Structure formats: structure tokens, C-alpha cells
Length: 122
Image (tube, rainbow, N blue to C red; front, side, top):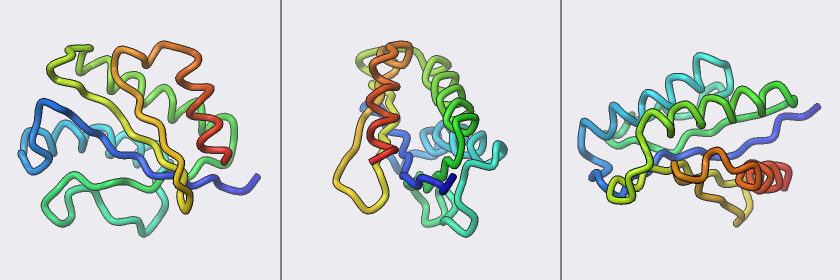
């Protein structure tokens, strides 16, 4: 099965993207995706230019999607569901104008992941 590439960006309404504390928070997500070999080789490292950047991820199997879903779910749950914090993950299909934002308070909704899968599948 061919890899399906998409971008992943951690966002928060409660932090400035240039804040080192937010970069460390977002870096935890990016690092976990990299440890699980979901990051496209040669993609720019998060924070390489001083900001937490969008990360390119590739999924080539159902197992990879499950690992991705579990990593994002765990990361969002660890940050809580505070509406003032507004932590979420934005997923966008590479080369297309389709994206979905997963807020922490919707991470357990199966409909959220159905929509993510549709975006990834294009």
C-alpha cells in the first residue's frame, strides 16, 4: 500500500507559537510520531527555524493509522480539554485543500477519526 502523506500541526489558543514552552509541548507530539517511524524522512525537523512547524507524516497501513490515532489521542488527553487552552491537532492532506482540526474535547469521538480517515484517504 502506498504511503498517504499529510501534515500534522499542534496548535493552541493559549500559547504563542514562538513560546519555548509551547514548542516543547508540540515537540513531544512530533517526537513520538518520529519514534514510531511515521515521519517522512528528510522532512524539516519541528522547531528547525525557531517555531514548532508542520510535520509531514506518511501512513501506509491500517496499523500505522492506528498508531497515529493513539499517539494523537494520548498527547491531546495529556493536555486536557480546557476551552481557554484550546489545544488541538490540525491534519491536512498533502497537496490538497482539505483539513480537519481535532480539539482535545473531541478526540474520543469516533466521528472525528472517521473524518480524519476521509481527509487522509483524499
